Image (cartoon, rainbow, N blue to C red):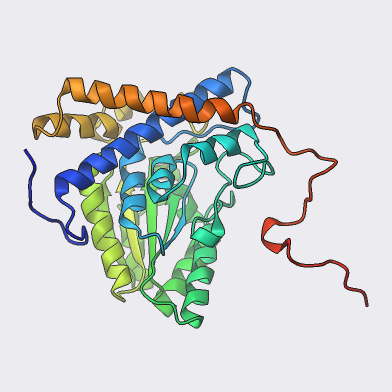
Length: 341
C-alpha cells in the first residue's frame, strides 16, 4: 500500500506519510473552522470569523514544508498552515473566544494571533504589510549570522495591487532574501473579481519584473501543492532568492461568516477551480488505497472529538480583566517606562 518514492525535501519521509499527515491537518482545520462558525452563529464569538474552506491544501503545504526555525506569516484562511506549523487547537480557540490564557491574552481576536519568538507572526490586516515584516526578520537573522532559514508570507490576489506588495517584493529581490511569497488567487478580493484587479494573464508574470522566480499551482490538488511548495522553499533556502508562488483556487465560502458570497457566479463554483480540495484529497487516498470510506469516517470522528475536548475548557476560561490587566505591549513588558528627561 505504501509508496517508497521520495519527493525532494521530504528528508526520508514517504509520499504516503507526508500526504496522510497533510490530509489529517486539513481535516482538523476544516472541522475547527466549522466549530468556530457554529460558535459565531450562537453568539459566542465577538468580531469576525474567517474560514479557510477551499484553501486548506495550499495552506497545509506551506506549514508542513517549513521548518520550526523558519518564519511564517499566515493570512486569514491559513488555519491548516497554522496547525501544521505548530499552533494548537486550544490556542486558536483561545484567541477567537477572548481567553486571557491565549497567545494574545485576549487583547485581539480571530486571525491576529501568533508567537513571534517561535517564528509564528500575528497577521496585520493591511494586506501586503506582512511581506516587509518578514523581510525585517530575515534581515535581522542575516545580521546575527543565522543562516538556512526561510520566511513564508501568504497573501490574497487583491494584496498584489497594494504598494506594500511592490515595495517589499522589490526589496526582497534586491537583497536576495530567502522569502517565499504565496499568493492565494481565490478569484475575488472580497467581492472584487480578478478582472477589476489586474490585467496580466497570470499573477506569476509579475515576478519577471522583479527578477524573482515564480511557480503556479492548482491549489485544489494537495499533491501539487506539496510538490510546488517543497520546490519553492528548497530554492529559497539554497540561496536562489525570493520565490513567488501563485495558487489558483476558489474561496468556497464568503469573505467571512457575515458574507453569503452571492457575487460568485454559479458557473465558477462548478468549474475546476471550485473543487473542494478536502474532497479531492479524500478521493486520492481512496484511489491509491491509502484509506477507505470507513477509515475516513473514523478520522473525522476522532478529529471532531479532539476539537470538542479542546474547545470546551477554553469556553470556561476568563477574559482579561480591564481593571487589572497590564496593557503594555507583550514584547516590551521588560521595559520600564519610568524614564524622565
